[in-house]
Length: 263
Image (tube, rainbow, N blue to C red; front, side):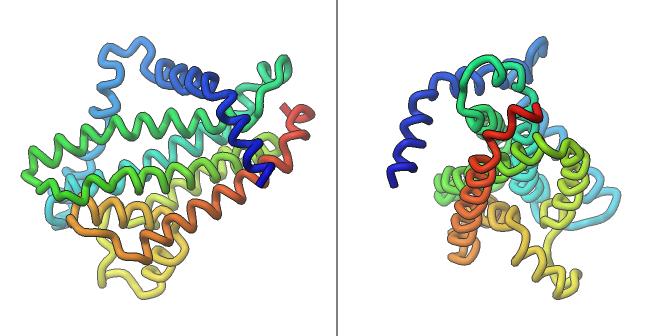
């Protein structure tokens, strides 16, 4: 308990640094961009348009209000991919600073995930626009979206800590992770429906061993289906998030004193 209290005090002590790092990441992402933060809305819109054309017109897939269905999954996947990929490189990319001054190393990883989370929140504007244009209903359950965002944020922090410390010792993990993220996309019902066309074993793998499924299912229940998520995916999402956070924080803490010899 004392150790946990100490961690929170340290985090509060460096809150201004975290805020500055998050602001820096957002500014660098849109530096010299004419539209700036508007791209947080335009990027998911353009992606949605491409997928909608391919899957509904060219391939003949019929999912009711496919643009909203797609966005409710794709937004969470994009956050997972960008935040964990950035977090994975966070320690190595700040090696010059870490050699000069003492800063808790996890601050850089946390800032990367947080800046990507802010970007995802901004992209909710794209979802609202698509819902208005397609005539989708705005159910009261949509107000519970922050609970899903918090769950996947904690999960990405944990995974980011784990990947961040791993990248210090094994740089090849960056290339491996790219392939993993591609497979993760297709093993999550984002661009397709998980229905009877798929074999039973595939349902078991996706629903039982895919963490992203729990967050996509909750988000889609609140926005697309207009209902409260079932207890399995809701509580399962929290459990998975905290387990990943504990694993990531423990592995990062255990390895952080060795970073200086590898960065």
